[in-house]
Length: 111
Image 1 (cartoon, rainbow, N blue to C red):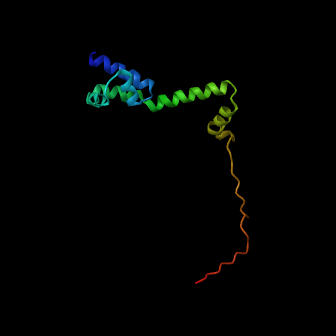
Image 2: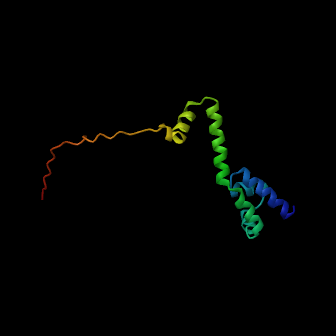
């Protein structure tokens, strides 16, 4: 198979796997070293950088969260409110009692 076509297939697999190099190599049947050799090609490297797999992954996970929220999943709704609803007061607070320690404390130093 021609290298250009293999690189295109790799880029597709790379997107689908959210940037997992091992999984992408396995999907198209190349050695990991081949991938590293291809990185010397600036055009290939630039195409990979433009994919931004971390952003793709977050977009995907957020879409799954939205699906859960739309289906009425209480846990997903609470999670979304705790993370995205903070400006509206949806936060968990931990109250710390300031008078939790006794007023009279004696310290004895023993030698």
